[in-house]
Each structure stands twice: as structure tokens, then as C-alpha cells.
Amino acid sequence: MKEYSNEELTQKAMIKKEISRMRGPVDLSDLTERCDELEGFRKLITVQLEANITANSGKFVDGLSTIKEVEGDLVTIKAVVQGSKTSISTLQAQHATLAVRVLGLERKKLRL
Image (cartoon, rainbow, N blue to C red; front, side):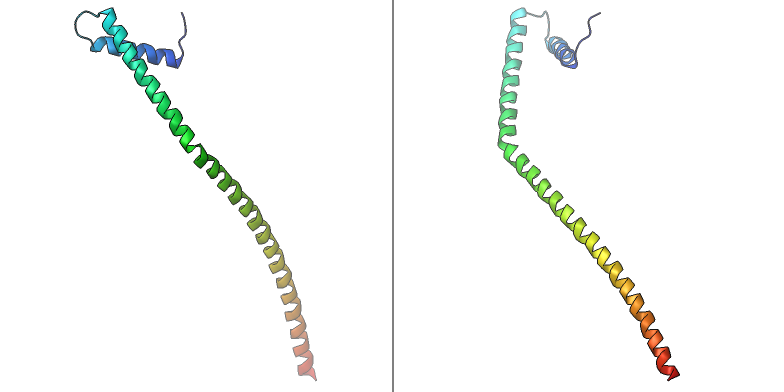
């Protein structure tokens, strides 16, 4: 048994639907005329879709550029945050060292 692609199955279903809509005996010329009409619609829709894609391709490219810029900004921000964390850790360690030293000096002052 032959396997059909989704497109072929869709086309067969559309043809069956069109034939079932026709009343009375199916005339080959009517069927051919309807197929030509549907083919005209398909071509028109294809042209409109292609024009829409072409018209919006610039927006798509701009969107991709914006994404790249944001990605670069995020990399920069990550580096700044990591540097800030390192600076904070260093300052905290220095603060603790100074606090211990101040306490030692206060005790020394009290003994004198």
C-alpha cells in the first residue's frame, strides 16, 4: 500500500470535501473550474505570504541584532557583578581585620 505525505493527504481530503459540496452528478468541467479557482487562490496567498515575509525580514534582522546587543550587555554585566562580588569580599575581609585591630587597640588603651 502506498504511503502518502501529509500534503498529499490534505490535498485528497480537500478534493473529497469539494466533491461532496457539489450537488448532483459531478461534471468534470465544473471540477476542473473549481480546481483552477482554488489554484488561483493558492497562488495569491503564496504571493501575499512572500511579500509579508520580505516586508518583515528587516524587522527580523533588527530583532536578531538587538538580541546580540543584549547578550553582549549581559556578558558585561556578569563581569561587573563578579568583579563587584570580589571587591565586596575583599572589603569585608579588610573590615574584619581592621575591626579586630581596633578592638586590640581599645583593650591596649584600657590597660594603660
